[in-house]
Image 1 (cartoon, rainbow, N blue to C red):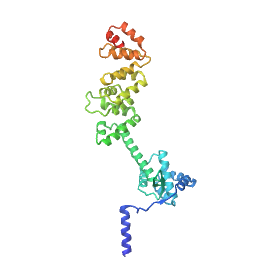
Image 2 (cartoon, rainbow, N blue to C red):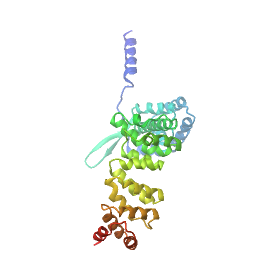
Image 3 (tube, rainbow, N blue to C red):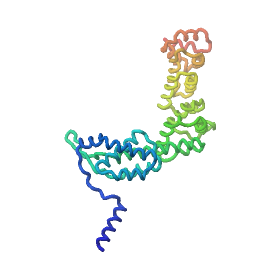
Image 4 (cartoon, one colour):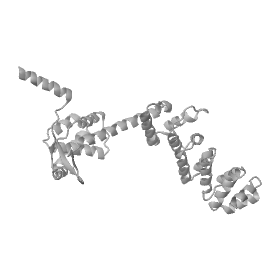
Length: 330
């Protein structure tokens, strides 16, 4: 009777606290490497991958449990390693299986030695691989939720990008990374949330605005960016636009001069255009008619090898500030 009660107590304890932890058995590093290269092991992994492809997790668990140690642990490790390296998309059922592997305790460990120290690590660290796989799966699910919400027109940027800092930062990074996955209609819906009203009381950070402008190629989105406080994101975007060098990009650079903190950089980039387009030339002439801008434009044009054209402008255009330009060139 007492023995039955003890057995019942042990069973209850194991259910509450999980498997009893046993000390891992030490394995030589060379032996572990031999197991990882064993052809029979790799054949078994290939066989189990078929269960993964068919989403048969019960059969997969049973097949693993039938294997004797240490082969079972090697196969677990290599199977999960394959899933990670091949970027296999996990089904919800397979994600539950992967999560179960995180909770398991490896039975073998190897000693790693360094300069004056040594420590033990799992010989086949499948829980670590499973943990990475599950993190990636959760990220994939979050990405899918973002894309579906945007495509349905249900994603409200202000609400979605408000909350605890860590969550907001994760979502900002997700938006920046996945924005070009959206359809033109979904992208336009997000852009209009920021540009459709003349007075915007809330704006996302400049990194998000830059990405929205880049992907949408929307002039109003760029105008919004240039009205924000300049930082390295907007400065880097000017450099990127100049490297693209098409008509749309030059127009956005010209528009950015409305921001006093970006004006000098923008003018310098415009003068580096070679050849200068008619539109850029006309813009620079307009700027040389302004007392505050004429010296800077003239100096940069001369520095970038456009002196001949500058002389033509000085000689033939009465609107430019000739005296200030000549003074700046001395």
